Image (cartoon, rainbow, N blue to C red; front, side):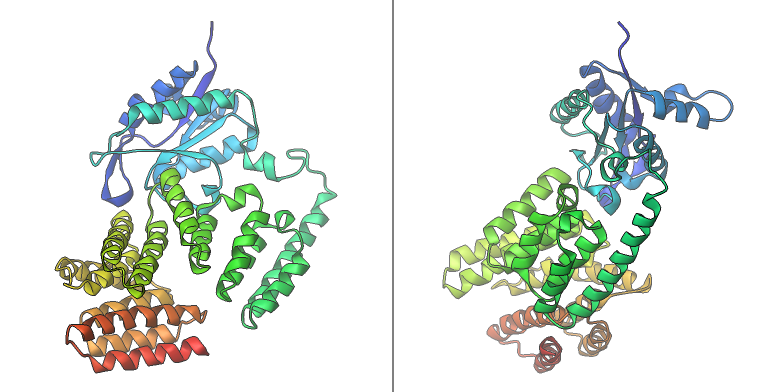
Length: 441
């Protein structure tokens, strides 16, 4: 009996992966993907299995269109794979399964799709073949039910038979989205009530364009309307609500609203399903950091010590996931400084984190957080002139009042910890005062 074909879209050979690893994609195919496809009673077909002389495009297109099933490995955001996936989604309503290496950050356009993470070892080879193979086989068997997995078919009503009468409706939606985004931009400067008034006019956020929903979500964040942020997620469409960015910011909002246990659960589930990232670990680190401060305030010394170590480890994990993102790195070294006996490892990390943020600034279009991070590093390094230079640059880029408030809070923790050890640094208090003034205004 002839088994259905399953076409595999993925990179070939050894390619750079997240965290500086080199991934052996041929091993991923031979040890994980192909056996899982066979377990699902399908025949695997990889692009290089069918390469012949002449132009490759025709057989590639035929297989993308005609194979009953497909698996796409989105690791490293390979351009060819994404092009092929786009074509597949445009012509096949269902039966396409996605996977990626845990720790790999997926582009925003596809993070809402249900992709399976698989584990890699430091050697770039599959690290948990049995479990990941079983998960992929299970998803392929479920794909036989032919539930829609193409976002094109799922989100565009009537595709592919879109009539000309929809053109005017589309144009009206574009104009509506622009107007709402402009109103939200103005409302953020007026406060939470103004943002809520715009939300009321938007109506059912589940029916609105995703961009409007995200803009409203982040507008609530700008005005510190944490409960509104949390409530909005429940009103979003399921694909949008499931995106990494929305779930990360939901964790942030839950923590700011005093619901740290829920925040921890959301962020830990995200790491479990999508792998660790600098942003997810950075927000989770803040959850543990807030718990540490609460334990200190309550006089629970032993719990505070454990929570501080947990926060440091989480921030370090985030920085090691992506050394280009200095945010979790600077938080790790700051908390190392705050220990009763400062962790000497911070002296090794500070130059690395500083280099990361300086390269980001040099790359062009730095934002507030780039200079705020540099400011914190200069304070940690007791570099007065460097700190004032970074402060000036940061103040010029403030977008939302909670930004300088957060930086001032971090610097205050550093100053107070040093003061308790007899290291009084007068100029650090003046920098805090400038940030506090901006936070109030």
